[in-house]
Length: 201
Ligand SMILES: [Zn+2]
Image 1 (tube, protein in one colour):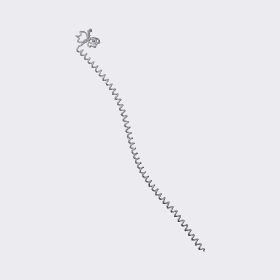
Image 2 (cartoon, rainbow, N blue to C red):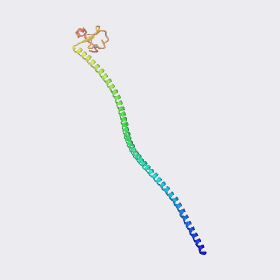
Image 3 (cartoon, protein in one colour):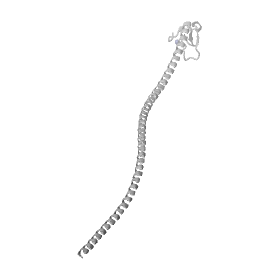
Image 4 (tube, helix red, strand yellow):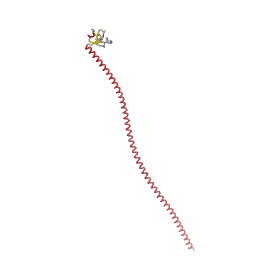
């Protein structure tokens, strides 16, 4: 009896143990299935992320390329700007030289105009002096002509007289006869006077 009871209880214990083991195995199976499912979805998500990362990397590479291009054009533009600045500086220097030259030209023009004014003035003075010299020359010529006439009169023995005068004169300009209305001329014999004028001889 005792043996039967112990056999039954042993069997029960074995069943219980087997049952418990089966339960544990079932739970483990469920857990593994859940874990596997999760791992699968994570792998999928991971692949998606990897894909997105690759796309983003591609976009970054493209942007970097664009940026490099932009940087190179900026460098080019900066270079051109510097060149232009240099050219402008050159032009400014030239402009300064041109302004300096203009100032010099203006100064020279002023000096030239001043000299021209002085020259015109001198020219006018020279002309006036020339005119005076010409007048004086003409007067001198007339005087020397008159003197020659008088000399030739005297050499030829020409004398002058007035009808009612007492003497003959060597010149018609003698104050004794110069105011007379009619002055006659000719040789001493033709005058009919005996004496020479006490003024002109
Ligand atoms: Zn006289």
